[in-house]
Amino acid sequence: MVAGHGGDFVAFDGAAVRVLPRMPLRPFDLSCPSAMYCAAPDATSLFEWDGATWTETPLGGDYLWDVGCWAERACLALGGGYAGTPTYARSPEATWHAVPSPSGRPVDDSSLWDTVRLGLECVPNDECHLLRYTGRRRAPDLELLTWTTGGWVENAVPTPEGMVKALGCRPGECVVIDAIVDPDEYPLRARALHGYGPAWVHRSMVNPHGVLPGSRPFEASCLTRDWCVGIGSSGVGDEDYVVRRTGRRWVEVAPPLESQWDVDCWRTGSCVVAGWHDKKPRIALLEAGRWRRQPVLSPPWLAEGSMTGVSCVGPRCTYTGYYRARHDAGYGAFVARRDGTGWHAQRLGPLVEDDTWFHAFPSIDCPTASRCVVVTSQLQPRKPGQQRGQMPNSYEAVLEDGVWRWREVGHDFSLFDLDCPDADHCVAGGSDGYPGLIMARGVDGRWRRVAAPTRNADFYSVSCPTSRECYVAGTGSRVRRLTRTPSGWRARETGPRDMTDITCWASRSCLTFNNRTARVSR
Image (cartoon, rainbow, N blue to C red; front, top):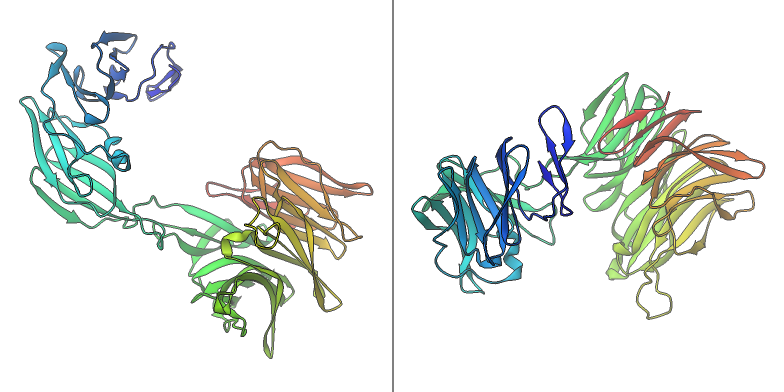
């Protein structure tokens, strides 16, 4: 059963979902030990569900906030707000009645409320458990209260290192999970305490970071329907991965860098990934099935940084990224190329205070070996000495006749990704506040908006398989197909929603994906 704050209840019996009659209650908790019985507290009453109807039992003026049941019509309810008193119980033999409340006074500190919200944990051996802090406010002690038919039993729990995040119990054992918040480390670390009564021990966790394993694909490059390379991060350590699609299967390969930000391939079996390694911008080349890390990019003005984009015309690749300047002078953007003599890098634009001022890290595309375009968005001070503005400025850097030219594109919007189908045209995806934003660069060098109405979208990825056809993917919108006409670009919805990346290898032939699914156009 699912309960909504507006009095809506929905039940699922294993085969079908049905909407139950609307009830004038806003339950803060719901406990269902079977399909034929549920209990829900609402203000000063307790409601019970018998599989067909709700029955109300008023309990006077005590405000109820939690309920737990270990069997049908065998429950415990807590009231009185944070203090957890008074307490009510019911059994198959007796309706709701007052029972002894926990002794002592809990610590009244809002920073500890996460522990309170864990609520009652009831198990089938007629017991319920509750965590609470007691003692001094500045150095509180954590204790586990256990309810049995005779009343409450209090037992101390070892002091947690961080915030208590979970309580789970079964007959004879409880587990307490606490997360350690370290501002210099993400994801959160966690530990597990197993115990019952006064005895508690630390146990190692299969998931040591205290987060669910997941997957966040970043980028992919496909040369055909059956040959792609993708990068992302996954697992409990949020570790980077690289996958290769050969035929209809994705196969994971060892990542060559500590962090991969972008990937590009120019022929089957030949790719480059760009990112950072040992806090320095670095790349790795895939040739003959093996990755080879290239020498680090380390010009005299760079203290640390990362590649954030790469674009290849055949084996000749151009890179862009961000860097932290030496002597903590600030953060800026750069472009780089590598040839037989080594790296050649150039700084772009002004410095900003730190890397959080990048609203969109530099992205690059090169339609030819001598023509490249970079877009990026930064939060810039409106006036000298003024704090950074709330909305970003967007910039471009264009390689023409061997010279990079930097200029401002506009205010109050971001450009996340771009693709240039030919030397004269580019398409970029971005965000303009809540509405999504698609912009196109014309022969005259000016960026213009492409009409693509959305309510709340961010367009993160662009791929142009031909000079007159582009695809744009993002969250909050379906994939958009853009076609270039004499009067400009025209956009229409054509693919699935909420995709975070798209890559195309031919007209109407694309792979698009997010962290849940991947789709190939047919």
